[in-house]
Length: 269
Image (cartoon, rainbow, N blue to C red; front, side, top):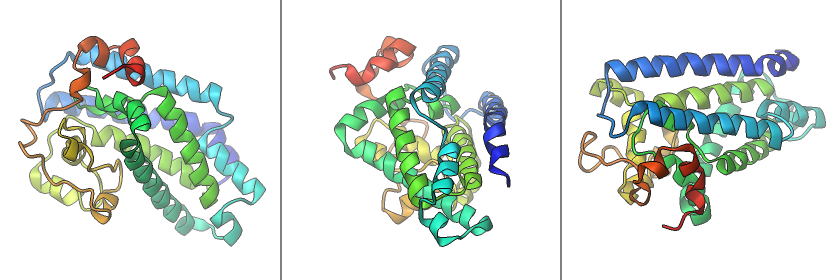
């Protein structure tokens, strides 16, 4: 596929897909919620969507290009594994999507392991509830660091622009799904977990219990948690009784307002 087409239409493709899936998840959460929310949905959505908008604008201003733009630049320079192997086609695309998902898993685990990074990531975990918008709730500094990690992975792999576009779409859409406050039949959930991260699987990662929080890091593919021994099948008290969030940030003015969550990394706990 012509990479100029990807660059030209990237934003339309991503925003269109995001809006469609967010709308579908919102309807699903309304019709078949998994848990009763503890905070007003409208206030949390304003905050979570607000910080997501801040992040989009920041990336446009602070960084020189998008992830797809970096893939195009790396190809022009002949950087990276697949650019030097001369390998292309759908096999290279599929392998790079999988490798980028692994890079995201490792980055996520690192943010939990390093205290200063966890202070940034705490914005994501401080959400007192768990729904689709939790999947887009990240501190701007974390978003910039994550993009730099993504740049490095794209360059090292020599990932094709098409692979990066597909990965960006998958990351955005599966993050909305895996954070959904939705109910799946147990048999369906168990079957999906063989390949994908489900809401019941990832919700455990948002538990107040540290051992549960330090597990189930995946957003898209579930294989990495199984492979690296970070998989937790179910929370100790069950899904309905599990407490969500971080106890240090229970004040609604901290956890559910834009100014509050932006200040979280700089607060004393």
